[in-house]
Image 1 (cartoon, rainbow, N blue to C red):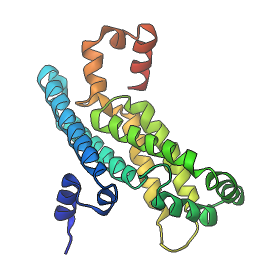
Image 2 (tube, rainbow, N blue to C red):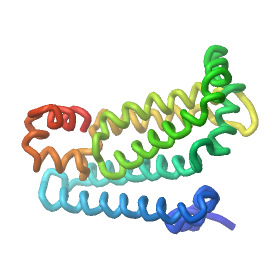
Image 3 (cartoon, rainbow, N blue to C red):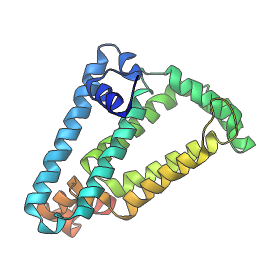
Image 4 (cartoon, rainbow, N blue to C red):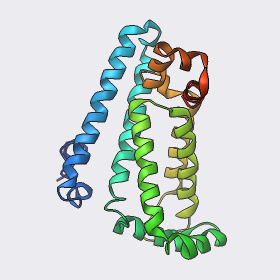
Length: 219
């Protein structure tokens, strides 16, 4: 019987239904996820060693929550594959066409989302991959988390009405709240790349130049 520990291990080694549906491509995504986690640990250790102010339980817990939420986005991204249209995304988009909270939203899904799902599917895949990479590495977390809030609220309103399978609307609200907290507290500065860049790259620390200003604002 599966349990949280066996499920976690199966995800790490790529032995889940979503992974197995990808065929040999699953090994690429397993390697990508493990590389991101390894990089996140290295970045966290460097921050811990270089910045005494980050050697606190608050920063450590913030890092852990950020990486876990990033892992959630990575796992959710997998069932948006294979491209251009995954069966999972098509199914849930059809659910939105019948269960969105407002009539105009249901019409939008039926008239535009579903007919052009071959365009929207890759965009959604890249969006969730961006959320995952940003949170795991702690890069541009304020901007990416803010965008993720909009993404999640769209899901909340899109699968709002009762139906089968049942969805609890509050689950999306809570996820939006988590993303809001990560954005408000600039979680990438807690043992993440956003914090490392502010110490080591003068342009980012002082907000100089287009790239420096951008990285300072989004992180």
